[in-house]
Amino acid sequence: MTPGGYGWWYVDGVSDDGAHGITIIAFVGSVFSPYYKWARGRRQPPDPAHHCALNVALYGRGGKRWAMTERGRGDLRRRPTRLDIGPSSVRWEDGRLRVVFDEVSAPLPMRVRGELCLTPAALPARRFTLDPEGRHDWQPFAPCAALEVELERPRLRWQGHGYFDSNFGCEPLEAGFRDWDWSRAALADGSTAVLYDARGRVAGQDRLLALRFDPQGQVQGFTAPERVALAGTGWRIHRQTRAEQGQARVIETLEDTPFYARSLLSTRLLGEETTAVHESLSLTRFRSPVVQFMLPFRMPRRARPG
Image (cartoon, one colour):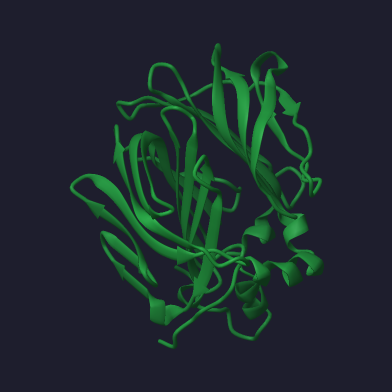
């Protein structure tokens, strides 16, 4: 990973009954870290390994919790099939992804401890470039997957459908993009539809991906529907998606921050009414000095030398 660059591994899932949800993101070169952003202002590009974190977010019945503690290079260990960040780990074992986490939420300290096991239906081996210069890449590792979640704190256990992808870049995310909307929706035949709608920092460098991944690992593009405006958030984040016949609405806003929102949508794609996990990101907001000042209250740093 290049100095000043980033990588993240993203997993989300929803229980079969829709009552519970989870999102886990492992960051090396944490793109939303105020500490990493401040370090970029120095003479030498910073080491991504000195700005890593495992973000865990729980939703639904049994309590909502959110944890993201930034750690340093002394807390990071990388091996071909395993990534350790502090007390938590992401590993590939016997064809499945296993995440074991033991984190503490902020600003109210509550333990978030448990594990997740994601079993892919298939592993489509395709990577997509998100910008014309090839500085930002996205790779969907397991768009169609089964998920098992067992939590100790809070005590909870459930099964459902999951999703696993990764993003990599050799420059700050906000250098390449103004904002984006992303969503993934499970379809009736076990396929997953993904929409990636990114607006570049430079005019004419927008990127739109509309892809359908089937359980056998095949990938097909489809014609993206027209944009549909969604209700704004409490922080007035502008949200939009793409849906057939204009049929899209917010069921629940899971995360509402000054620069980022995660939501559940009721939408219509590829002739089906379905539920989508949706994200809106404003990197213009993220660059604001006011937002940078606020971030450490939700994202403390606990770094060992290394």
